[in-house]
Image (cartoon, rainbow, N blue to C red; front, side):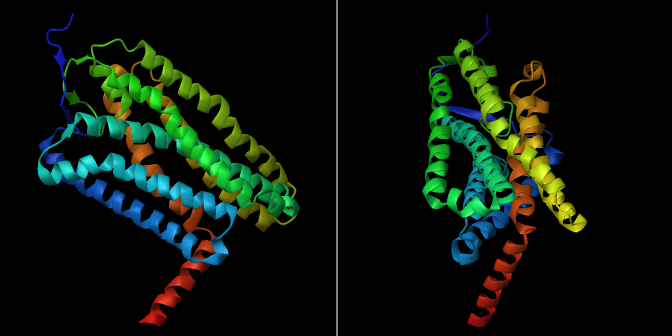
Length: 312
């Protein structure tokens, strides 16, 4: 059926965002700026949560988890753009490609689960403030975060195992800027029906489990906000919730377009755009929307800066 079948793959070639030579420097600079901003913003949040006792609360515990996810996700996916430009080689070993795919699929699922936990935390804080300390304590938060991490990395194992069983490929070129599961699926000449089943199962799981767990609490939160007598108080609360909801909705829409687009095989460029949003925009925006605009975080940052200036 295929003119050439390549078995015993030892490496892949990552095509990248664009093959136009004139654009490579611009793509590298943009990726570098996004990566540095993502790492800097999320590392700042993580350090503040660890160092400032005022941020030792369930809300910031989950935000610290989100920061770790975002930093790992950006490093896992954008490093091929950065190292490929500097070294002139976009070759990745077979094992390295499979590992990158496994980490990416795991982190996407993990982020959706952590966002669900964060929305429940906000629901309890706003709708049941008198019971917040009793419900949201570290006896719940620690195990809840652990379940999210373990389940996400276990859920992506079947996908990875199936991909490792592919016996041959039509090409060693992956038309993407990292080793994503769908571009790998499109270049194999092995049967992909089992992989399709696992991908659809994961999408449906998050669509009918993670999605309702994330958005249902916001319905009750908005209803509670509407009962706030102060106009300024309602405006501030709506501003915060709308920012959170916007990022989460865009994340879900991008993932659905990326993994449930029937015409995607013939238009992988659109898949790259959705992946860029998930791998670059979301990790970069999360620190701004969830943390750095927060009054508690700003005060914690001021306290830490004062400590540093006193030391000098």
